[in-house]
Every structure is written in structure tokens, then in C-alpha cells.
Length: 480
Image (cartoon, rainbow, N blue to C red):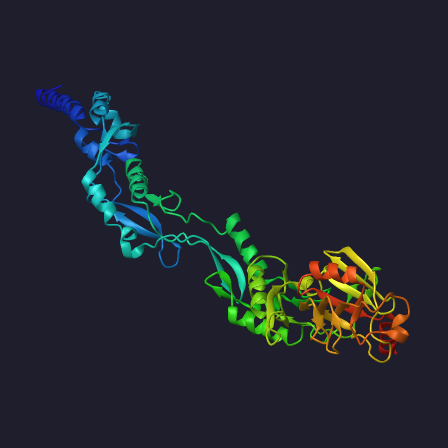
């Protein structure tokens, strides 16, 4: 081997040694070719350069939010420019632990390394400023939630559904986005994160739905207005609805409509000169032909009775009120009107009953028989006693009758012409006396009996006079 060749080989060897030494030195300061950390290529990078390469690569977070007008989910890109997010990794340790003397082999292979994040930093003020600048947090893009509520349409009550609106809770928004930044999440769903205020009262609220049903029952009901005896006036659902108005969601009584309805009813009810039925002393039901006491519908009292039940839910019953007229016992030119009577007051359990057939008189007080006596009524066929229902309205003691006859006790029940009085010219009462020697129409009564009546019976007491045979004949004639 000549000197030239030797010198060449020595030069090449020296160069190789120097190159290898240089590569080894380089490997202590740079990651070798083919090296990746967490999937990121860091070939030829210093530890500092590698850490920068591993830093957060995202530039924005997609925020999914509720649209204020449509309620649908829409997205908004939130830039992270002002956040200055920085992740920290110990790349120096990875570089230090590398196979430095084996750097030559890296030219022909790949090295995959894993680095654990040792910390992170970001600009707090920048993050808050970025969050506050979100369009979804602007006031014009937010609406308050609205509770479910009671509503009515065409007189149908229902529960209107709640509206959760689009009002964000800032603290929750900030926490959700801060969590995304710190966990390197690229999307945030504010709906799923529970960042919105919600209506407190929902459409399935039990109390609200019961209230809707209750108010509907105010309209969809029947009111039975009790008149007298078994007589009633029925206000069906349509009538009830016509007597109510809806104030907001409250059914309220239309006073004018109720009064108009009651006034129309008053034209068809009442018993002035109408037949009435009652139970006589024997328990039989009879219906005198003539009723001379006046009673008619007390419109104002009936309106008040209806107003008490019209706004209550479910079927209801009300008692009609009545007016009754009779002569003032102190001034025969005046009429006394008693108002507010209910159906039972029209022919009460307190009354005087006189049977023409039996020639007897009874007095009942609250349904209890207090007196029974024989009497003599009007001369049959000539001066008959009036039949019907009358009112005891005046008394005198002593008194002079229209024919000049003087009596001790006088109890008028029909004008000043007919009444109950003692008859000292009679020694007997009852039987068939009235057929041949009856009165002029008054009720001749034994002294002790009329004295007791005079002292115990109050003005306004009904006097019922009837003849069963006459009633039976009238009923038969009506039937044919």
C-alpha cells in the first residue's frame, strides 16, 4: 500500500470518527431523525422546540347553543387566540434518555416516544374576555324561561306548555368552557352541560292540570234551581256558560245575564192563581183550585242564590227565592211584601187546614198538629166558604161583622169578607149542619178553639180550604 492510499484511508477514517462524534454530540441536543413524541414528529428538534410542537394545536372551540328564536341547537366558534394556552412537557428528560451513541441507526428506522403533560397555563383574563364576547351571552340573544300556565280558548281550559327560553347561567357556561380548555376538548354543548335556566312549572304540573279540570267543570255543569214542591228549573251546560264570562282565566258571573235569565223565568213561574199541592191531615195529596195569596219569584234573591253556585265546579243545586204579598194588618190599604222565601216557605208545615167534607179544622205548626176542632162552613150551594189557599192577615177582638153580627174573636184570611170567628148562637158544630144551616161563608168555630188560634197563630199563616169531592170531580174532568 503506497503512502497516498494510506493517507486517504487515514483521512476517511478520521472524517468518519469526527462525523460520528459530531452526530453523537448533536444527539444530545436534538432528537434523532424518525423520532415522534405522542405522534408528533420532533426529528432534529431541540427539547424546547419539541415542547412547542407538543403544545395545544387547537385554535378554537365549537360551542353548541340554543337559538333564541327557534329554540334549535346552533353552533358558534370561540377563538382561543386570547387564551394563550400552553402545555408543558418534560422533553428535556426524553432527550437526555435517548440512545445517543446509536444515533447512526436512527437513519434507518423510527423512534416513537410518549411524553406526559407536566402542566399547563393559560391567560385567565383572556379566557373570561373570550367567553364574555360569545354571541349567545349577549342580552339580545337571550330570552327568559316562562312557566306553564292556565289558559282558555273558546271556553276550553287547558295548560299551556312551558317555554324554557334561552337564558344562560354564566357561571355554568364559564365552567363548561374552562373544562373544555383544560381537557383539550374541541366542542362544548351548553344544553347538555345544563347551562340554561329552565321553567319551574312544567306542563305536566299536577296542581295546574287539576286547576284546569276544575275550571272546566265550572262551565261543563248543570245547575238545578229548586222552585217549590217538586218543581225545578234546569240550567244546562250551555245556559251556565252563557251566564259566565272569563276574566283572564277566571270564570266570573255575568250579573246582567243572570238577572235577565231570572226575569224571564219569573214570567213563567209563581203560583198566583195557580194550583199548588200539599199533604192534608190524613197524608193525602190535594191541590186546591184557587190560590189567593200572592207569591212570585224574588229575582234579586234568586240571582244571589245562583251567583253562589255558578262559579263552583261540578253539578250544583240552588234554591229559588220568592216574594209574598199580604195585607198589612195595621193598615188595610197597604200590602206587606216578604222577600227571600225559599220553596218550602210557600206552603209551609205551619198552616190552618179546613175540610169542607169533614167539617173540621186543624192547625199544624212545623208539621205537628196543635189543634183539631169541628166547624161549620158556608151554607152549601148558597153561601159557600171560598176554596183555595189564603193568608191569615188580620185579627180583631171584639169585632163586628159585615152583617152587623158581633163576635169576640175575628181572624180574617180573605180580604175583610171571610175569616174564622166564634159563633155563640151555635151549640153544635161539625156534621152536616152546613148543608142546611151553614154560615155566610166564614168559618164558625167553637169559642175555646178560636180563642186558642187567636192567641197562638201568627200573621202570614196559610189557610187551606178544600172540598175533596170537588177536587176529585175537577181531576176527573181534567182527565177526560
